[in-house]
Length: 345
Ligand SMILES: *Cc1c(COP(=O)(O)O)cnc(C)c1O
Image: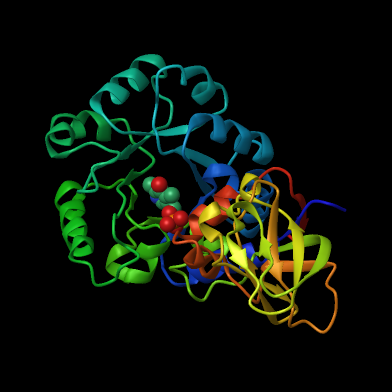
């Protein structure tokens, strides 16, 4: 086998969902956008539906269509980008629930699909998606009369518990929604951890399900092993890879490993990331190239056939830190060349 291998533990995803569910008295949804954070939206959604999830969230209607195919009718599938031009057939035929972001979207939905489900997204300060005060003020009464499934907003700084933006957005959300009888939702993974005043009626965890921070208690979901193509011996002074970016300071053994930036091992990992042989760390040295990385295995007592880059030894966030990014980006960058196996569920 010449490509890397990703093993995805559905039981760990289910366990993470249940743990997040137990932290609130709200209904716990599941965010499966970006192909389930790169891990397979259909299989993840099916496993979580079996575990009891009834509300799923995606970024765009096309993703919702794929989830509907996987789940059949029944579970609610809400679309963060709302009802965009060209989405009407998909939303109508596949019973998707657009989270309407503007008066334009409200008009489009009410005209094209009268009586069909929808939710409302409000902007409480992030300035990315959702209706602002004046828009909501103008349309709230008309929209609420049509019984939206959800009124939601999104926190910009929930992964920083002490950030004053959290309390500010909470206050704005209260002012925009207090007194309505429609279910309300403010929190993704980070908001769940902020405490019960942030939970409202429905939560929308994503990254926590997949084993990422800020949900530090999360079970490991992904193991990724990369095959060694060859191992060579270098004398002190020899160089490795593009731009001669690494030079041996001692006689060394260097493993050439199959996986590169085309597979999501971003180039910023050059000379920074760590791989593991069992529990023994082996540093990535030199430049990450498109299909290959080079790893210093001098200190191993054996010649490895494969090295682990994600697993119990190293979380997505630890690998992300080495590359100056976040776990979300590591997961959603994992490329199509890997072989994948899903366990449990
Ligand atoms: C991505 C997203 C979520 C999930 O966020 P996590 O931090 O992954 O839990 C929830 N709500 C909205 C609007 C999102 O865009």
